[in-house]
Length: 460
Image (cartoon, rainbow, N blue to C red; front, side, top):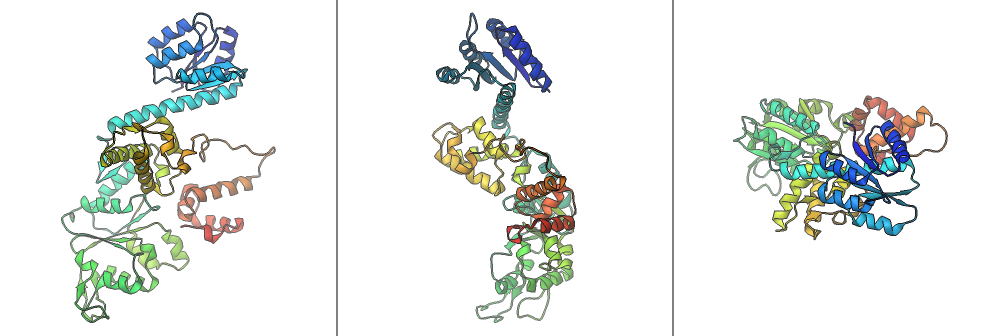
């Protein structure tokens, strides 16, 4: 729907000029030359924003603004003041105005102010809604999300949980891969059996082999007793191979054989022990690229990648950012025994604009910090980390046009910037960037080499 705006000015000609321009740019505009009539109209109809001149007969713009704030606090007001009248502008803001513009004003400046005001109103409404619904929002095995991306993940997990097929979970760090793995286990027929997790990057190769496959007594210096490995311990349940992309090359053929034969041979042993565990693996790396670069065995990749679930980064989940933030506010308010009820609209704007390279884990840390520091009943911008404070939706990547020098850019240059921007958004993960761009990986690799893209910058 078109945003509905009420423009109040006692000069009919000004009303007509502004109404014509705003209507041409997608606004539904109602004009009124009498502030008294405007006040009456506002008591009967809803508007997304109001623009009012300051000097008008019978009732000035400040009085009208104060009345709107008292009766329609959710409707942002922009006051038009005389050029250079700083005191009047301050008075307008003190009266509750969202913003002000000075005469003579550029119509583009007015449009921008209106867009910001309407966006602010929308964020306030969303924050208020989330305060009401966060407790009733659909939770999926501890996961929270209303976005289409997460609903698809939830639906896929429900289908995957019914099988015993191996699952590969990919996504950036902090996107909740282990939570999804636990959701698969919790909704499967194996839910009463063990869920055993191992971080493949957390221990040296010699200990990792023993941890996975077990060892016999005397197999090495500290092996004073025999021990069953995690595959055997997970029998009947699920074994999570976390960060499998970090698995040493020397161990990969041994893991492949274990997965194929469904048996393990303990370190120092001669007999094989059968196991019955479902395999779920996670990684934040591009395993297909690692296969091409001979850093990961192709046959092992296909063995673990029977069903692939790619988790979206937080920045791709839209208003889930605010839903999660509100949930964290409520959690940490109880933890710190504070009465923090939610987020201000300005905070919501910053949270939506920030790219969240650390994903949900970083958002949780941010909100924990904000709740701990705030002295208000709701989180305000000053409570956020500095790197989040400076973000606005207007300045966020992809949210608005960037001024270019005079003249056209070549198609090659536009393509180069677009590809490098995709690499930046996806934190250097070439696989995710290729998927987002709609091109195959080999094409992306070739173009990156032509651009001189540094391998050291790649985080795939």
